[in-house]
Image 1 (cartoon, rainbow, N blue to C red):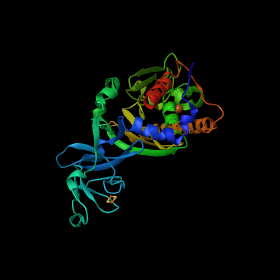
Image 2 (tube, rainbow, N blue to C red):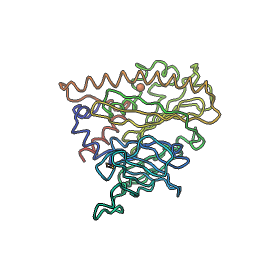
Image 3 (tube, rainbow, N blue to C red):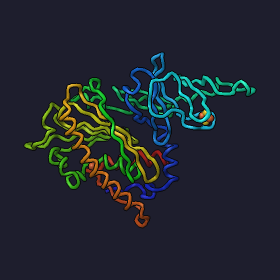
Image 4 (cartoon, rainbow, N blue to C red):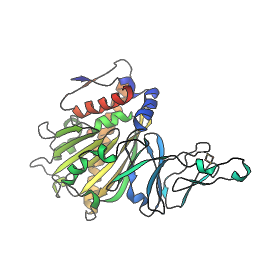
Length: 345
Ligand code: FES
Ligand SMILES: [Fe+2]
């Protein structure tokens, strides 16, 4: 068994600030999906707590920017839309979708006002299938390096390019973002806490596979033999759950072609925002989708109780750390090593 990260790291505003600088400012993070800007326009998102905006201008190029006004720092764009420009709601500085500052009221009365140097700060953007990722670090290695063999593994069971976005779910948790990630990264708790899931997927340690490579952690769980579940109704024989450090989770359940994915976003030291984008093959019928969503919501409700319970425990400040099982929780250990390296290395 290994020792866990210090529990103080799960409630401390200073640690969250360091994570902002050393983790979220330097990593590939899921921002949204290409359907949000299929016809041009923009969508706003966040990389950790960093506001970002992804645009597709008339020239067809996908770009991403820090979504912070160069004037006095208001967040510029919110939501999504098809527009030619982004206008800051504070004093109406107006930027093109290429990031250039196009106009600022009263600029003509201001000597030395150089719009040329006050464009939105550009950041990195890249895609994999319909998934759009951003990275505030202009010198980051390519997204493909970060994703490793996840696209190839998924291709064994699913054609990501043929998926269509259907809907997004959103919720918040009273827990540090790392607790939410760690909960995603092990199925040691599945037999205890997820009876419905465990009746469908074989979560026994010999059948449920865990593997970590680089920034990616993967879990593959086959359908339970002789189990009866709507998940057995379809061509995908096993679930795949992938995680891209620091905060992106992706789920494929057995059954018909399905995929849901999204980030664990720090909203504060003890609060996490989540959203999940759900994609399906075009011919998957609504009844099966409804059943999957109900199933997934049940698992999500069970996980909420777990992560919020952990938060109440680790914040108590009496015990300073916990223990990690070397086999069943190897992906948690891997996650914690990456966090520790980023924060202290
Ligand atoms: S802060 Fe954006 S226009 Fe003033
Ligand atoms: Fe869980």
